[in-house]
Image (cartoon, rainbow over all chains, first blue to last red; front, side, top):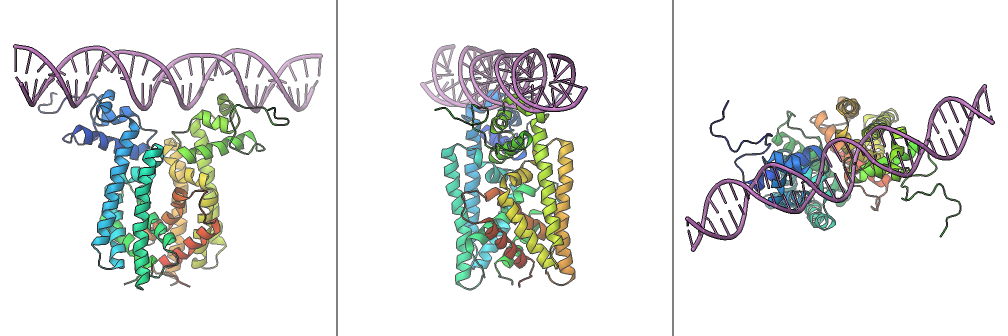
Length: 208
Length: 208
DNA sequence: AGTCAGACTAAGCAAGCGCTTAGTTACCGA
DNA sequence: TCGGTAACTAAGCGCTTGCTTAGTCTGACT
């Protein structure tokens, strides 16, 4: 059966949006594969066919498989950082800021769970230079959360023993979403976000 | 410089206890490598040289690399389950049981962090049959924690919206230890355990 | 019409992979 | 002293890997 108006017939089924640019399709296919099987179990042929290209087509746009990982990891960390910053900006009080962080960041981990998995679990496979670059972004994320806790403690809204330990536990709840989440799960992103926001407020003694 | 009384001179430095049996040295070397680089980035040559064997030596004791992973994953899950069960048995009240679970299981994730990483992050690379087997053990772990929460709610000790969601968040705090922990960190296993136990009691509204 | 740059592919290379084969060694019971 | 068994290695097989090379095609600019 001939297919009237479809793009250049490829032998394998692409996994990414056929209307996106080639670079974006490669990034989507790489994110999909890295999240699903991990960086080392993913072959450049997987990525190429996921983007509807021949194996060599990858190297027109990216110099190596690691460069694809770095591109995804860096932009993923940057978008996570932007999200955290605006969650803080948009909240008048530390309690609002923390609820925003936990709610929105949890939703992000659900809705972008493939990118989130790459961000949280694949950065070890970067070259030392690239790894150092994303580690700096990760530290910044940690300290943004800790600062919210410290401000909440300072104005008496939160009761917290150690803000570093508590920030780590809060981020654990969020980050771990990328581990257990599956698209087959019934809970919606908004439900997961509001659950985690409520749990967080309890954890810092800011019941309302 | 000749080395007087060392065992059969191998070209590469073994990473595991030289006094252990060969099977145990292989399991140790595999756990070390899988935790450090992941299943797919680990080669059977890495494991063999880590155990002080030639590449072929692995196959005297294990039929495949995946069999090594399954062996580690299954025994790791079983020891985690035993730990959870005794944490519950040893606690007179749900609050004690929860504190035991969070404290001891966190310590386990620190002290056995290589096995814990394999348990928490590498089970996807098992064959479908082996994967199903460890998934059953994982579900059992989840429901043990949820049952403690339900009993605490029933006798009025805990205040919890949804015991499944809360159990997941509690386990997230523990499981995530295997992600962020590094032997270079200053906090002791006992400190991490008691911090997480205290946070958990707060999360379920059982302040004491 | 001619040219030239960029996107892409067919073919394939060198290296590394999981695992096997054939053989050696050490040890144990008869 | 011997035959048998289990642990182990040297060598290497067939395959897959990340990536390259040489070339084709398309479209924009002159």
